[in-house]
Length: 630
Image (cartoon, rainbow, N blue to C red; front, side, top):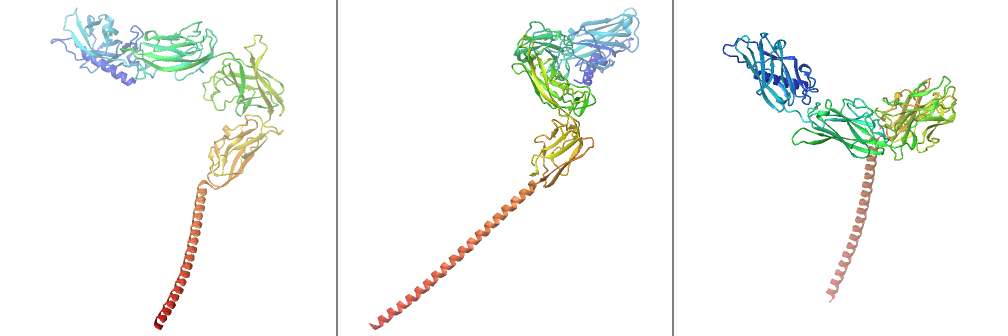
């Protein structure tokens, strides 16, 4: 509910109250007591429904976040123009002032629904009295009749009675918009998102493995105490819970035992926010925690508002190095060097517990797991080097998992390593990250992960090439830049490949590499797979760039793009049309030949018929002659 709506409701209640209290003021026929009552915005208060004896909230500062459903309008209580609206179960204190000072002996007596609520008759209270309406009178929703009578028994005169209506509204129901977030350690709960990678050690200890911070909100998304109970239950997996009803999570809230289901009632919760401490029971595994809210309606309805998972890990059993983008350190004559951020070498390293920027790239990452493959956090990793003239020790810090570019959270360690002064380009060493093996009770063996490293100088020379001399239109392409130092060895990792963004003489598919996001890894840089494509038009294709060396040398890569897709389609269509025409011509030729053959056959047959007719005629003549002779 908005503050504006809250104030409107308060105003409605105040006006109704004023109308019932005399905002439709009706003095007796001979009344001389004419000072009207006024609702005072500076002294009026409302108490929370669940703590009627608690601290009051001034009308002028009441908001939907502190007292949802409360509103009022200050002013003269006349003809119901001033109103007060309060949520059911509230204890209300309305400041009543008089426009004209009452006599020192005047009394003000008020009642709510026929129940006497206050009598203001002390000298100091007459000028600025408080009408206190207890929560019990306002337990249910509806319109309550409030009546106040001012009179003077010492100086007889007619009394002045004013009435008003105080509107009591039902509290909004609790809602699934209530929030549940995972927090680490102890203290104030997170307000917008989980701040804890959901895992912790299985070892039983007093320290919190984590905690749930639950904020109950109503259907107006306002914080509310209008509920019966909130509970958290581990439905599957190890661990136990401890209810923590303090305003902030308590440190060392775990013990040696606890419950699978913990709950808090509305009366136990501080400010509609409660916590549940997550504790280890000595068993590793993934736990599912269900958080439920029971409303205050009849019958009571229980709703699941969130489900969280939490994983308890065992002892570390394996270390492995992943994503080693900083295997070539900077050979330097100016003191020890580390890759602080991509493209920046300094004498001070950064192991990045929180990788907030895209350039916060550790030289390498160590992943620590238990026997079940679960990430193991809270480790202190050491290191050794096979040659201190190439690599000094490495430094690693656990990734907190909260930053945009995090490495994976608990179980992942962001590391950097230091190169010594006067390191030689091309020199090599093995850098070993290690931790004592918890399975070895003697403490003499270590779990290790080895990173082969070498040294390289600053970029001195570069070449740039495409992965093919020719491409079909729109085909996938790969652009690679190779960088070497003055000794011809691969340049140190993390250096900017380009002095300016690359350009193309034709519109390529995908994005061209930029200077701000292109760095050497192993002496090379390549565009990502399926992220860079040849142009869609045919012709010569050139990619141009300014190099990352001190001189900013020009780099280029060329290729030929064959006919574009539309040209290919047109050519195919033309070829098909030509083939069809040729086929039609052949068919016509065949038909002509057939016609010629048929004409020859007819001519031959006609000649034969003519010959036969001639023979018949001869025979007929011969027969006729023979007949005459007889």
